[in-house]
Image (cartoon, rainbow, N blue to C red; front, top):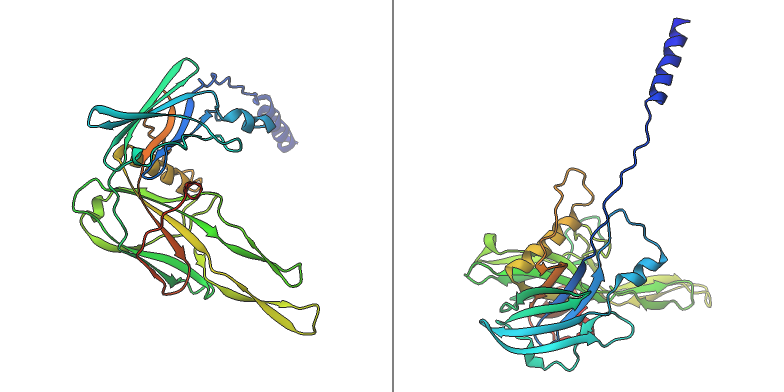
Length: 337
């Protein structure tokens, strides 16, 4: 009897100690989030969004209210401390909320110059500054079959050799995207191929050259995921896929072409490197509860985000085993997003 009494007493104490806790979080002050870039041969481009509180609800109207389309933007080109040119940006596309200037002279965006950004929005002035560093090329790129014994023979890695200049401060940023990635639809006879390419250039890595200053070394560029996380994917060379031909008794096969990958190899200044290095670390933490929380180091005065100058070299890489690439690729403006 005493045992049952103790049991019910314990339960009643536990339930009587329950108390609902309601925390009133202060409202999040509205700030402009800037995603801006400038690189040689192309006009500067800016995407503006509003920030959102961590605990705010997300519904169907969130996306529509996210983008800002009523800002005034000017980019100033400086040689030292002297302003030598400027252009205004506007939203020139109906389908994508990007501020740019398609009439911008090609020589406006040049290596070695500083670019000041000024945004007027909601009676506020948001500013930033960046430089376009001098770009450095890769010595060569080549394709090898992956070393993993669990991968199929058509799985490949992109390898590269790079010779770093002997001056400290060469901050490297790499992006890549599959501009061709063919998938087979076996529901049709004969099967058809669909290009399921990546939607945008994805961040592979960003960091300083402190440990490799002045060195020549080999590296590789793993395939990043659109869902984030540590880049660890491989690419696919061409292969033949068998299928059952319903019009005949036997089987047939179809050639699935190799991936075609665009590599963006960049130099960025110190402020941009700190921001994008933080993005890499946050993305690759994998939700680890023991990882150190990190706030991104923004170079936007009066807002959030980044205004980045890129010293760029592009390479178009067909995933063909033992293929060696040394020539650069010159993309059009739609390729660089």
